[in-house]
Structures are given as structure tokens and as C-alpha cells.
Image 1: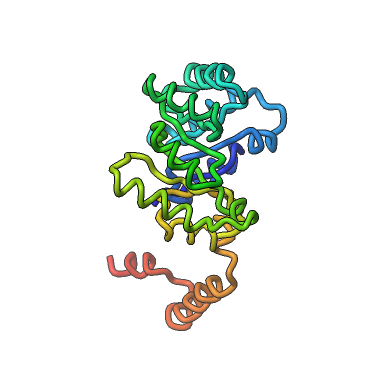
Image 2 (image 1 turned 90 degrees about the horizontal axis):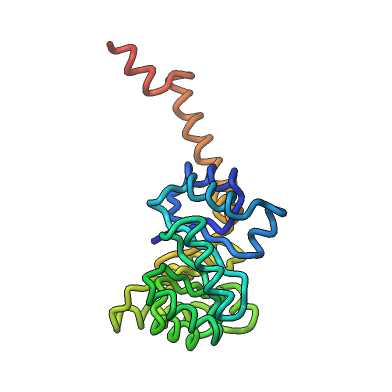
Length: 230
């Protein structure tokens, strides 16, 4: 499984890559908007410097026509680096762009996926990642788990090298359901990841362990006991 951060906030990325087993970062125009009017390429390069080349970095085009999307993609590949995954919405124009980018050897993430047909076509066009929108599909009455499972099945049945990176979540239950349905990855808002540990029972268990230990050994830690034996 791969957990990616759905944010462009530098401090958040620094923090969460230190604590969580994060494999990448994704962004889109709406995510970038939260950071204000940034120096776009300088900001994207700062993200790359934080996550390094071992993690994937996904940046979305903003144009909607074929020529414009291809120009956006070239700018990203030249101004950030050629390992960046270009996020392309799966529209008719987007499919043409995906095919053209793959013909040049670029990494591509097919995004804004709401249906099986979109995903199947993106697979055939050569996309490296498929990004189905879990919560948004659910809001439209679409069975998100079924859609994701169908992508996983096609990838397995026909030997595609693509991965499903599920996106658009309201809570961690949806993230878990997407992974259980066959998604190999999920791109998640950091706040949702942090919410995992807000359950009072977790802290109570830790407090109980500490209390039981201190009943016998006081404030001494295991490391303190080891030093006493030297």
C-alpha cells in the first residue's frame, strides 16, 4: 500500500513525511489555491527537495485543451523535474494528452475519474496511476468500491503496470475501504491521517501502560534500568 499526502503545504509535508510512511505528494489547482499566490515553480521545487526523488510527486495541469495541457506538462517537467507525474483529467482531450505524454516517456496520473469507462480508457492510453474520486462518486450514488475493484481486476487480468491511487475522501473509513477494494495507493488529506490517533482509547491504553510501569519502577525507564546494570 502507498499513502500519499494531498497537500502543497510545506510545513505539513515536512511533518508528515517524518512521522508517516508517506510515499508521495499530490497536488491540484484547488490544493495550490490554499497556499495563496505562491511562486509556483519555486514552491513545487521546495516540495521536491523535502520529499526527495524516492517519493512520487504528482502535479496537475491547469489548461483544458490539448495544446495547453501539453505545454503545462512540458513546463512542469522542465521547471521541476522529469520524474514528476503529470496529472491529467480524464476527458476526451485528456486522453489524447495522456497518449502523447506516454509516447514521450513521461509519467502520468489520470485524475478526475468518476466511472469505470474513464478508468478503462486511461489504462489503455497508458496512464501510470488512476485517481478515482471516492467520496465524490459516493455523493453521486456511484459505488466507489465497485469502480475501484474493477480497475484492480483489469490491471491484474491484463497485466497493466498502472496503479490505482484512490482520492477524494471524507474520512479514514473511506480510505480503508478503497484499499480493501483493491487500490494500491491512496492520496489523503493530512488531517484525515492525523484523525486516526484522536480515538480516546488509544491514549488511555498508553496512559494505563505508563501507570502500571510506574507502580513498580517509578519514573525509571527501561533504558535507565539498563544503565544501572553497567
